[in-house]
Every structure is written in C-alpha cells, then in structure tokens.
Length: 154
Image (cartoon, rainbow, N blue to C red; front, top):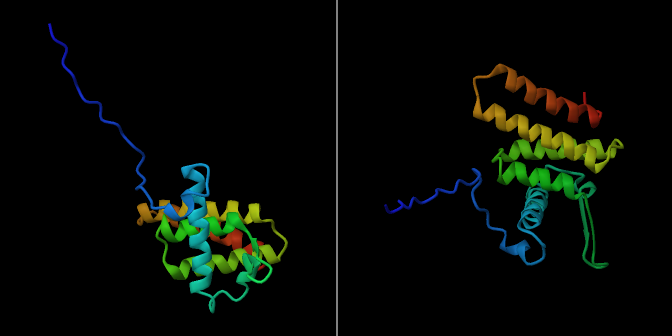
C-alpha cells in the first residue's frame, strides 16, 4: 500500500512581513532590525510633528557637528509601533508623545514610560477590535490616565 503524501500547511503568526531593509544590515537579527525600524518611525513622527511636539529633544536630540545622538529608544520604538503597526492616527500619536515627554521631564525613567506606552498600545488594539465594548474603552482611558498622571497633567 502506498502512503498518501499530504502537504503540511505551515501557519504563521498574523503579522505581515515588514520592510526593514534600511536597518537589517546593521542588526544581528530580524527582530532587532524591526525594533530599529520602529524607533526610526518614532523619530520620523517627532520630525513631522515638530511644531506640535515642542520638547521633542527630550526623546531625540541629534548633534550633527559633534556626531552625537541622545535617544530614548524604548519610548521612540513604542511611538513608532503605534504609528506603523497599530495604525493609530497621527493626532493620538502626537498626544501620547507629548504625555511621554512630560513623564520623562517629571522624573520617570525611559523604561517606566515605555511600559505604560505598551499598555496603552495593547488596550487600544483590544478597544479597536471590539468597538462596542465599554469595558475595553474604559481600560484604554485608564491606561492613558496613568501616563497623564506620570507627566503631572490633571
């Protein structure tokens, strides 16, 4: 009796392949290349919305004369993910960038702000997937309120 050959269907995660060709040659792994790509998208957000984000140098400061960059990578990466991966509107990204800057200026570490931004991203994803859920919308509001309080904004 002859065995029947079946093709195995390989299932991949539900993420589309992103173009990270700019960062791939500098990063040792695909994951790190994507993280850098999101970071640069966060920097792009700061530069495009420069007039709406007055203290952007808190997150990214570039000195071309001294060939020096001061960067808060984790925060910028989360902002870039919000814009590219989560497709949040520009207004929301700018608002959250300003809240993140306020929190850093109020003494919170980059890591602490990054964790709250990630929490906001996850809550936004859930709320967008289930727009009729009042509980998920409230969870998103609560996550944003945490960042507002960190920045001393009432």
